[in-house]
Image (tube, rainbow, N blue to C red; front, side):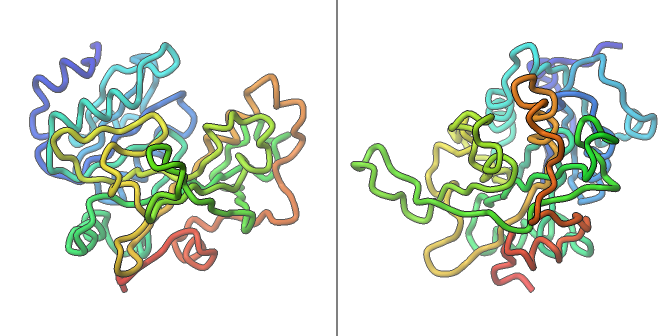
Length: 291
């Protein structure tokens, strides 16, 4: 049976958009698609919308999951992530939402013992409607064994090499925008010669509360500039991280880069422990006032 496209789904979403937080997972391929969906269910999302072509296969437990809603969507054929997210925003105002690709996994402070809904409830109490997430590159330790550079068991990450630059405001003589920074690091920094300049940033406003007329832009920022800030004016706020094999996978698949890379490991590589404490200790996310 064919899955509905986005227009058909939004005409009859049932209870899928009734209560957040809602996760939107965009499948570029089938690599770790099942583990991505399971991770976000385990994190506590009420509904998970899967945007994928009909030909992508899912494990039986996911096919039968009542909170998984599959939508026919093909990024490789030109379907837009940005347009899809904005359509869901229009259909469900005032709901917390999240989006990612397959082989990406959300981590936030204390996520092993607290749900994403608990975290967002606290964030809402601090009068915040969006949360900065850092996309932290993961890569297999041995790409001769793992040809697509993806391995959950042998995942590594960079422990240093991350930095931020002021974000210029083109509407104000390129003066820095208030409480906004562009963040860089990981594989997009180490292999920048293979990454277009506009795609080198690792910051993404992946968690946000929808509202009328809100628009996601192609650079992973929003039309409401307050959504793009890393903290409120008076103290530090929560931030989170998305650990992602996406860049490593792309670098190994791209004919222009694959033969230049024999290993992603370097002297600052460490095994990823799949625990929020490691990301907190490395300063790759911020607990703010949440203890």
